[in-house]
Structure formats: structure tokens, C-alpha cells
Length: 146
Image 1 (spheres, rainbow, N blue to C red):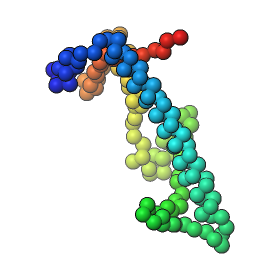
Image 2: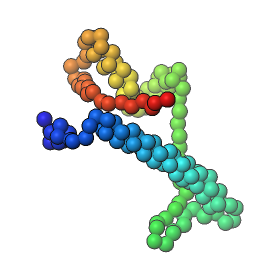
Image 3: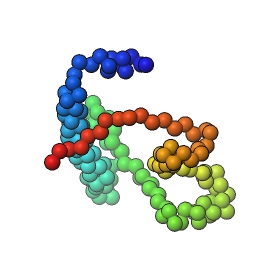
Image 4: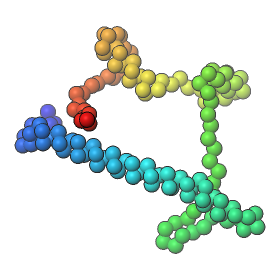
């Protein structure tokens, strides 16, 4: 038993007190996550729209880099994003292999898929690969009252 588990057994708070604290923590975390979303949205607006537009206001006035005293440097950089529809993945893999880029094609199982497989295997008693470690723990969950 870990020190944290031993300490938890000696916690003087009642189940109700711990439950109240859990709801308070969840509410605080939810509020902070909402604020974090707002901050990230503002940051994204500045990074993706406002600064690039201001820095490229005119071809004659183009600014690629600016230093902010005591803070650092801001510069423009082109970001590349890719997407391949799941229906087209096999064709993309085939194309990469045909064009001598097979080093880019790797077998992959999404973690959520692997978790669902493990859960089903545990519930149904299915065999699992010997190299797959599966563990579980009981956790208290909350549901808001009406």
C-alpha cells in the first residue's frame, strides 16, 4: 500500500464531506477549463488572424519579425495541416508505398479503440495479446442533481 493510500485511510472527513469537496473541485475545474477555452480562442484569433493581417498589411510594409522588449520575438511562419478521409487511407498508403515512401506507413491502433477492446475482453473473458497490459481501478464519479 502506498503512502498516499495509507494517508487516505486516515482522512478524518466523512463520505459526505469528501463528496461535497469533490463537487466543489469539479465546479472549479469546469470554470477554469471554460476560462482556458476563452483564453485559447483569443490567442488563436491573435495568432491566426490579427497579427498576420497587421504584419502583412501591405506588401511595401511587410513585417516578418518583430521584437517586443522584455518579452521576446514574434515572427510569421506558415503552418501546414493535412487530412485524409478514412475511406481514402488505404489508397493513400498504397500511393506512398508505390512512390517509395513506405517508411511513412506504420500500423497503428487508436488508444480509444484499444481501450474499448480491453474493456470488452475483460467483460467477456476474451483472450488478449500477451504484450498488452490491462489494468483497472474503481473511481468515484459525480452526477449533478436536478
